[in-house]
Length: 316
Image 1: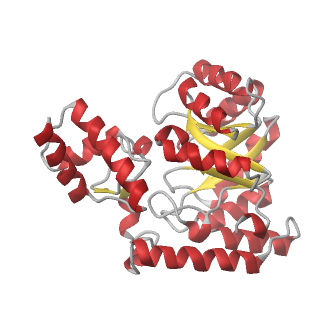
Image 2: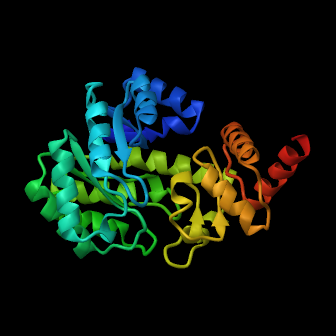
């Protein structure tokens, strides 16, 4: 349905998270649903290998915290060997000094990255700040520019519009803005803006069909309370961490666990309940949560993790 609306690029999965992510990516690629399909992973060879096996293009993100820029460039070069489009995300881009952003973007471009992604990962940016970053990176990078704006403060659409005006080539969006915490830039809003500015031509009626489907799915799986929880600033989801790669970076007492959950998230959640699990128990809990989340199409809450810990601990 989304492809019929005119969407040409789609990031569809995180293959290293679970075998189901690999399977769905292969299917999307084989059926040629989008002209350009991407899958996401870390800047490590094993993630790149799994992505490449699906046939998709390769989207990588920097680690949260410290990293060696030479190692990142090695990963970019390794990914390029597969002959796919390779993009690299400078996570939490607004936390860096502008000179550092420019330095990294230039280096990654020189190493062969086709796309430099600029994510406002913590949703703390402003339209002015993101436009400035796009403008400066656009001047020096021999690569396309992509924006990824989180909506914690309700500014993701405004940031994206400012970035479009500043010359970004791509904007990451989702239906109803759904995503990590309380989501990212809303798709139909940006599609309408691009239609009005004459930059693109999307089928609004096709989007309406997608939105109705996702709306009903949310009601079925979560309930109407989700929409209040997902509000910027005051919504519960603003402080809810889901992705395993985010768990050690975003202080939170609220967790949601699904196929993207990792060991850090499970460990932190159990510690918040005074439970110290062994590494083996944590690994088993993560495996169970991923499998059950895929089977049910639902996310787990902290109480569910404690219950699964009980199952694992008793059987060990």
